[in-house]
Length: 146
Image 1 (tube, rainbow, N blue to C red):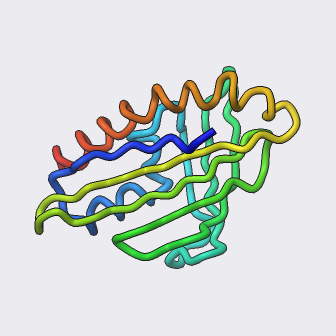
Image 2: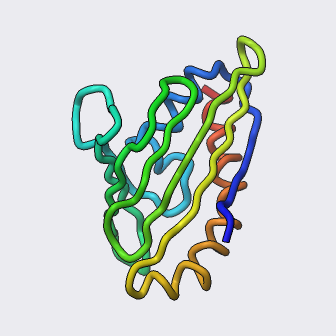
Image 3: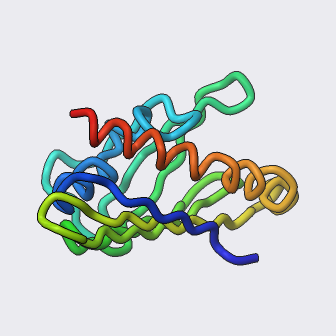
C-alpha cells in the first residue's frame, strides 16, 4: 500500500515551518494522540539522531523510537521507526512559496511487526488517513496564529 501524503500551504516562512514541524517537543500541539516527544540529544539533530514520541494508545502512554534518516535544514526531514509492532516512516518537505509562505508535504507509511502486521492495514493506515488532514490543519492554525 502506498504512503499517505498530505500537502498544505502555511502563511509562514519555510524556516519557521520546518523548525516547528520537526520539533518533537511540539508534536503534541498538532498531532492527535501525541502526549510528548524529544530528541535523544541536546545538540542539533543529525542523521542517526533518535527521536522519541509518546502517544496515548488504548488508554496507555506508549513510546516509540525513530531514527533521523535525512535532514536538510529548512527543506527536508525524514525518520524511520526502529522499535515496536508498528513502525512509521515519515518524510517531509518544506518549500518556500514566497518570503512569508510555504508549502508543507508530509508522507507517512507504516510497517507492521508481529501483531502490527494485522493492525497496520486494519486500523493504523485508515486512522492515519483520517487524522493527517486534521493534524496539518492544527499545525497551520498554530503557526499562523503565533
